[in-house]
Image 1: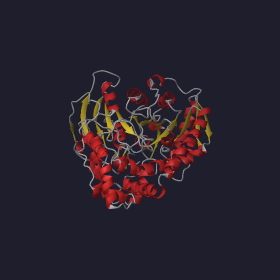
Image 2: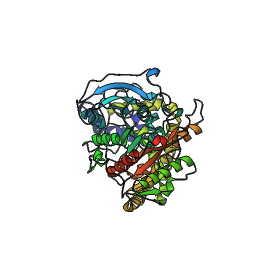
Image 3: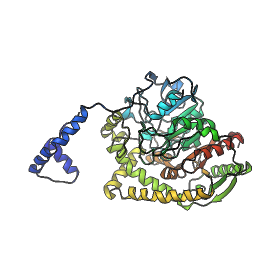
Image 4: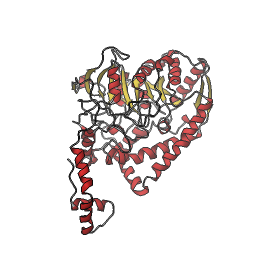
Length: 503
């Protein structure tokens, strides 16, 4: 309940702003703000505006280790919606930053343990409307701030292809459950590669849709201008099917303007003959790129050529700008979104789950418990905001237009861009006594090729294209905004061309 601030409260607030008002001035402030304080109090007495829960039958349990061999489940459920539909008979796991009413949500952080959402995310309702079954919540990384699978408070998520190795992150549990065959499909979230990196490491298909295609309503934020959710599946066909179900405006996510959802499954049989595919030179040969990864992706490009595509190498020098632009946007937003606004940001005219915000406020008493990835990110964020006042966030937002234009130019003469997804295969999960340096390095080292497409909003898919040392390698196809159909067309043709585990 809102409490009108005392003079002492007002003095403390003023001092945080660097002000030193007199007692008389603060007495005046207390009088002036009375009608504003009454307005806040009125909100307490006014019922919230939340969408109804269409399928209220909710039971859940936390599986014992014997039922959770990869550490990928947070909770299990068996929630069913309408009978029949496109997803009839399909079991779907949700990344645990997606609200599922009546079922706990932890976002990988112990401090949120016990919070239960009061609403369903839009994507949940759409899956249930299409006849899918919500099989449970998949473990995700601590506040989703990691490209590895070792930061969740529940423990590491193991790669089903090779135990002891990373499943990728932050949609770690989602990828592991699909790869292990425990679910047919999963929902992930992608702010720097968090769908595509785990897809690459686990050998599944993961799509980061065009920014704004899939409503983000009822999903925990990192930064409102890059937040994206999308499908993670074993096959391209299932990926297209799940996107058909979840895409399109919901009337609540105001980032969705003129969003053209489509029948993506209809594009699967098209083949690649005549498609122009650009092999992005700057996607290869990073300082931490693995040569076998680069080689497998180049071989995949030649496979596309044999299938009838016109493949040529192109240079997109601005690709190197992708990481700095992304880093400043996500970096400055860390304190504002995750801390000051308790995980749900501001400046967004959408749905705010108040219970989640209240639960996240507990971070103020638990900051020392943060995973190193979040702790270090917020320390830097606090420094940059205090020292530079958002200068670098603002400049990075300006430079997004240059970055986007560079990729758009390449996509003027080509239908798709092709490059490695993760620049390396899955790495060993850091041990319990790993240093902060190792924990954070393992969290960010795979993002060089993925994060630029979060900054520019283009759709990008990861498809497995081979193995090395028993670990999958993933290629990434990037398309024009809203052209997921061409991505699926090419992806399905590649998938039909052979077993990726023998490539």
